[in-house]
Length: 381
Image 1 (cartoon, rainbow, N blue to C red):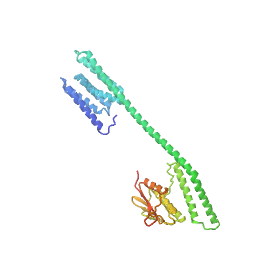
Image 2 (tube, rainbow, N blue to C red):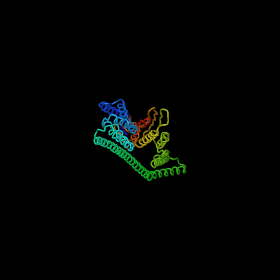
Image 3 (tube, helix red, strand yellow):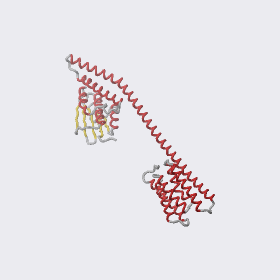
Image 4 (cartoon, rainbow, N blue to C red):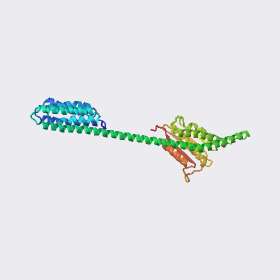
């Protein structure tokens, strides 16, 4: 019934009960003939207000007889109805109108009958008017409880509608994202798959003819055949992920377990390359493993294209908190004329940044180019 956190509702209800108890005590003490029983009824009835939020029906069942005893014995006036009125409001707010109506009827009826019987010399019309005024207060308490309940239900419905609208927007966004993935998958299949397949078939035919003639197969041709086959494998895996990203069996990327094959292909294509691994090899987080492989792959590709016949060295450092991937070449890049960053370096930087790491890429003072990626190995939440 209340949205106040922690101890605050209980403290507020306790303060309310104390204020009502003091008010009624002062009123009772001002009436001649008040006894200890009357004070006890005041204290118990006021104390019941501590539970008006959490147990409104209990508060009503305690406050009504206590205040009725007080009204019949002392007749302190309308103030005796305060705890009952608040309890009636709370019970109606909780959705139980019948107990509230019965309690109000019992309190008003017994008070009216008691006042008429105890004071025959008083004007019955005046007593009836006082009771009618008190009836208006009870009706107002019930109406206030009903309005508050409807308002609370409206707010809950509005919140539910907002949650439903948010869920609908998320579903629509996921649906659009799925449709876009399927579109990209179709475009990749229709464009890249055909071209790579042609390259792979043509390279295979050339290798077969060379061997059939007894000629030595060029290393570059074997590298093309192997690279095209590897590209087809990764492209098929990528297409599977695009079509069903939640499939745990679809892994689109290679990891450092295929590093030796990657370097071997680079050497077959005419790039002298060496690999140095420091630290104990161990299983890496999947994202780090894929990113490290892609960084080496892109760096070796850049060396082949831009280094002008230079050699490359690949170093993998398995540290306790991070994995360091470094690729250097002794090509023609110089600090005076640094190369313009292209799509490859931008992609590497995005991969490293997404993992919370750092990428350093630039010419070496002694000539050549260095790519160094520091990838954290800690849990990323």
